[in-house]
Structure formats: C-alpha cells, structure tokens
Image (cartoon, rainbow, N blue to C red; front, side, top):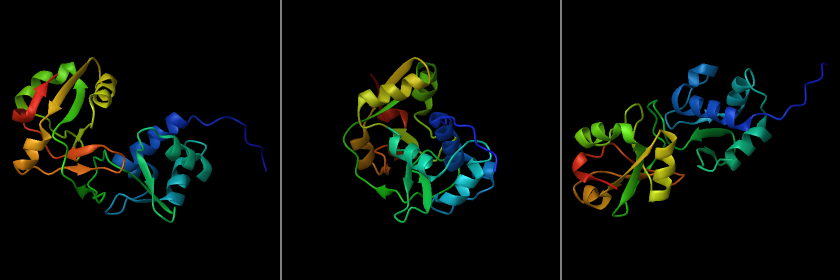
Length: 185
C-alpha cells in the first residue's frame, strides 16, 4: 500500500463542493437525490473522494462546523441533505409557518432597480430566502457586492395569503415577494 500524503483537507472548498452536489448538481458525482433531497452518505463520500480527500469524520466536521447549518443528517446518519437553497426540484419537507411581522432580505445594490420593479424572485432557486434579522441580511448582501437591505412586510403578506416556510437552519422561505411588500432600508 502506498502512503497517503498527510495534508489538512480544505474544509471550505469541500463544503462548497458538497453544496453544489446537494443543492444543484448531484449528477456531478453520479448520485441522485430522493424526492426529499436526501443523498446516501456513502455514495456522497465515494463521489467526493474522487476529487477531494474525505471520510465520514471530515463530512461530520463540515456539517457540525457550518455556521449556516446548511446540511442535515437523517436520524440514522445514513443520509444527508441540504436544508435549503436548491435549484433542483426537491421537497425538503418544509413546515408551513406563520412568519414574524417583518423579515429582511440582503442583496447587492446593483439589483435594486430590478427588485423595485419586479419584487423578489427566486431566480435559479425554488424559494426567495429571507433573514430573521437585519444583521444576517447585511452579511448576505455583502457577499454579492455593496449591500442593500429590504424590509419585508411578512405579516401583511401572510394575511394576504402568501405562504412562508422556516428551514431547518432558520432561513425563511417564500415563493415570491411582490414589490408592494418591500421597503428599502
């Protein structure tokens, strides 16, 4: 047996690859997600290991360390899925939840004209992502450029019949947010 070079795996890079697979392109490593977004952990590990050094302990560390809690293991630990952010059609078994009166959305200033004309649209995702607080929204917006924060009148939207879901990691999800429910902060 040859010896493996002792290197510390780049957990951030591996996590981004896992996100790509579990949210958007499971076929990249030749796996499939079930109807609820679950992937077999062993198949995921086998697929990722062709590109990055990984084992169950590394995967467990990535899931446990992820500040945004992007992933969940099944109760028996044999399956894993992304909690939200999918562009592939899956039902992550979200619970219909009454939202707080206000939620926030962080984006880049360059998208303001489009948002103010069309509202918030999911674009390539299944849902629009909303934050429970302004600080989180600012962090999200900063990832995309100069941040622009919108206050979302979620209570009024809910009373008007729009549905809201709360993902396992605390992100609020809805199909669209019409411009009438948005206020620039």
